[in-house]
Image: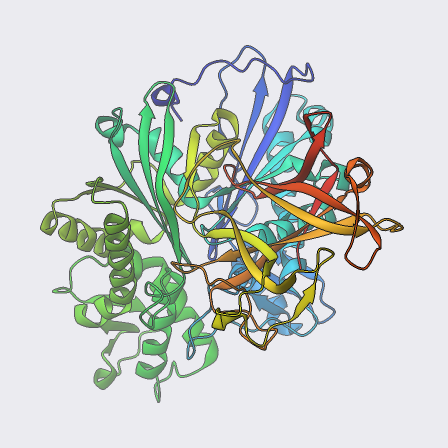
Length: 603
């Protein structure tokens, strides 16, 4: 890959003085997984390489199915390209192995639900999505090790030297947050990719952002890379549609600014009743094929699975024009004229083929319209990446929509399905995105002064504070507002006060961070007279810190009941400019700000 478009310079070495460093990016998609790596060497321009898998593939490829076979004891027996090997398939059938696919969507956040009436494959009893992530990450890293060992001189020594300090970049859909990232990081630790102390060497980047950086390095978008130009990136993946908007701050080296909050869709823009990714094109086709093959020689599970496989491999990739029919090879040479089967090949009309794709196309267009509206129509260029964008029909429909609305729509050259893995490396090495936009309101719970005129304060838990003032629990305190522009290292700070008894020996304090996912937050987090939260509120994480030093520096006071207490004033600081949320507690000592030790935990 040519890196000249980014103006990437030679690597200067790490802050620890290391002359070499290994960075591996893993893009585990709903249907396929791609892995890339870069061995950074002081004084040399970084070179991105794809960790191609040679075993079980006629043509070595860095893209493998995101599928795992588990035996009856819950042990992983085959991964990726192995699951398409005929001998593996026969062994799986004879030994009753479980084929696990689309499992990545099981990790989705609660606020991105699967619509009723549409379901994901059920995981075998006792098998969790966390274990699948662990097993699959271990498999992908074994492939990277095998590739480096086989293709580099002294490859085994290089791996042994660089693996202990290796950085791993994992990609996520736009809608995933700290809870999902935490589970993925823990999976990497459990898989032995990093140890617990090296957990921070596992980093996360959104698929859309990584895809944007890949596209910027491809020659087909050169003319669009101009200062102050606004571009929308649409990553049409297997299970999700990720859309993000960027403004180009500088061209060489490339610097981007997110100008509107990114979107992630599992369903047809959340308002309509369809899932959005490419896997659901195949799901619609499977339903159609099952109906058409009923009462034919192919009316059985194995034949149906073979038909779906042939559809995915050929008909789906070739379909472009609803005026033309498509054919699916069922095997054999029999004719069933009433079912449209000639010499073992099923004819599917162009209209039926289009019906498999149209819900996804409608979903993408709805998301693009929303992005343009929320971005004040400043962008008129859309870059498409991802497996679904490779479909001639999907691409032609989106180009047609673009022409009708004065929007240019293109795909970068090169294998776009691998775009995210390569772009993730660029994200880690170049630090290209300098500004992002908050997708939601972020804040915490506070106790508000009681207002008898406020109907919202009625039937809520209340208490009298040390000064004799009545206070109401579960109030909302915003720290970061939705659609706020955020610099990479920018901290958002809000001050809070605790009343702590003089004789207290417990100084560990927890602050729960909530997100409000709708337009205007409610004054209170919970419903009146209930512990349930208002729709839109959701717990994100818990920040824990030791306030002992802050307590000892706080003034002694006497309450209305003549007890001694201290008013402990501290700040909650949130950083959202990176792809992970981070938070910490701070206070003043001798007029200077001091940060106390703190940790973030997730449910």
